[in-house]
Length: 144
Image 1: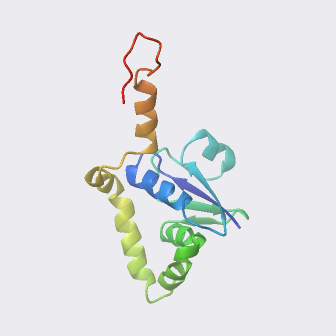
Image 2 (image 1 turned 45 degrees about the horizontal axis):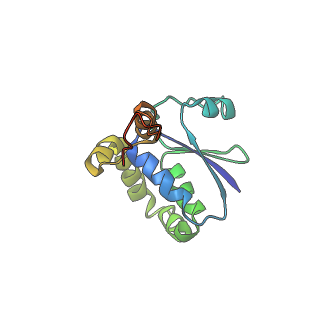
């Protein structure tokens, strides 16, 4: 099974979660794509994907699109250690709670990023590109 996770690369929490997910054991092939990027538009032209998406979107290799709480549950299901949790929260008794929790996280993700001091992929890239070079050519002292 292949999953494409379209995430908000301008959100520190989203970028942090993607980094964490990519380090977890998974029996699925996971690809993380910045929503609204050139790659996202090329790979999924039929999906409306603004640069700052309002919800998590997961696309399976067969083209099935999961949004919102379904996308969160698919991400958890893809991770070997969290598959049983995903199965449990997808049941009718837990689904309303899961929906509210994931909605709260999505709605407040930028505030949570600020509160936790998490930098987004976009911020980290900008910081690296704007920083003066650290080349040991004798004209600059290295920054450590």
